[in-house]
Amino acid sequence: MNQKAMKKPAARLKGVSLAMLIGTLIILTACNMGAGKATATPTAEPTSEPTPVPGSNEPSRGQAVINGIDVLVMESFPVQVNVVAAGDLPDTCTQIDEVISQLTGDTFRVAITTLRQPDPACAQMVVPFEQSISLDVDGLAAGTYQVSVNGVTGSFTLDTDNTLNNVNPSISGFVWHDLCSQTGTAVNDATEEKGCVPSPDGETVQADGKFQEGEPGIPGVKISLLAGDCTSATEGDEIFATTDESGAYSFEDLTPDTYCVFLDTDDEDNAAILEEGILTSPTSNGVPTNSVTVNLEEGESLAGINFGYDFLFLPVPESAKDCVNSFEYVQDLTVPDNSAFPPNVEFVAGWRLRNNGTCPWTKEYTVSFIGGDAMGATAIPLGKAVSPGQTLDVMATLTSPGTPGTYRSNWQLSDAEGNVFGINGEANDAFWVQIVVDASATFIGTPAPGSAVIGGVLWSDVCFLTNGTPSRGCVETESGSGFYRANGTFDASERPLPGITLILGQGACPEGGIPTPASRLATTVSDEKGIYRFEGLDAGIYCVAVDALSSENVDLLIPGNWTWPAPGTGRQGIRLALGEQRLTVDFGWQHMD
Image (cartoon, rainbow, N blue to C red):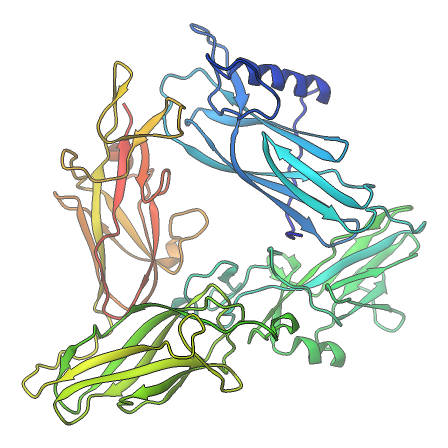
């Protein structure tokens, strides 16, 4: 089962019955299928292009195009189920209108409708969206249930009846491992990673306090329940519950009252399990807290009183003991093969590797010399954990041999027990650095700090219709939709965009897209050829963004929208290696008349 805690939006019914809305939606679907469609059913391919009546000033309605759904099950009790639907709206005037859900037999049928106002100035471009829908699963019997959102299907399974059997109130929740492999790393030194956010003090990174699919529960943690509000409750008369193998706990047969749910990280038994780390959830005024006050009413049962814990040194979970060690070589970072060096000079060889196995790499893993010419180094500790799917940049300080010739140093990884493994887990497949020692070579040396560059070009991406026929450089937003946007490619006939202000931020791009004032490092303006550069940069994570609504850019860009790096996106996250020249960080903009 997929598991994730989500906030649930309320379906807006606007005073009419669910049956009437479902019926109206089916009629609208049939009306919007277009010529050549002989039949239409509720599961037919929906369209997000509402069909207005010609000459009408009334808003038009339709169904949203859904590209995929994710069914998320929360292992609290009673179980909560949310569906996250991802899709596209055809233009900037179309918006989500209704979210309607009903259970028929073992199938939840969900309809997401759209509303489009009659505005001829709409930008004809795809607008991606995500919609979270909470399913009403209280009281459902154990079994497998289907979910259909505008014809896109998924399913979930309840292992037990989703009904509370106790007469008296209860409190339940779970403790989970909130994953971030770089917890405690300085913000400026951290690489971009899903689930990692800046800590409250802004100095380091930590897990985000949000339960995500794949994050495991923590068994054996003792939870205390004290009488009274957490601000005044005292220890001594509390009762205890211990999390099971899934990290879940519960207090049953309680009387209606005010309680404090407390996770004591200093408790001797808990400290042995949690080791070094920090609580990330719940929070009070933005700061993580280890206690939650709850008020139980007669006949009420409260679920979802959860605690997130972020281990500082990412322990290997029990389920990973039989995992597979493997990695992928991504690229050289500093020394291209057959680079020439004088004899006896020190240089830094760097590689980017990706953990493509199933084992988390702990800080006890090493990069190990396994053959060829050692050139002075034999083992490099990772020093931090790397989860499956993440990349790691490795640097080895080597010295060129004193005798002219060609030299090659071969490397693999070793786990905490010293077992060596190669690329894709193969015993004999290594990555390497190969140099040529030449007494006449000029030593350039390892790139100096502050020598990296980010740059690119901004251009006006063009797409227009002539008598309904799209111009060269147009792409259809969806096959058969009749809506077009520019193709995101700087074609020969298109012009650059000079005078556009760009922002360089330190760290990953924030959720809102534009680096915050505190993270901004510099601004620059594109020249007459649309070219811009940020120079003098160190290795690290950066965000390049264009604020189209800023006072500097609004008159040059609006109305319009981005076509590159993605429709509607005017930002790019960049990870720079030492001395790297990243000069293809481009931005395409489509003006709207």
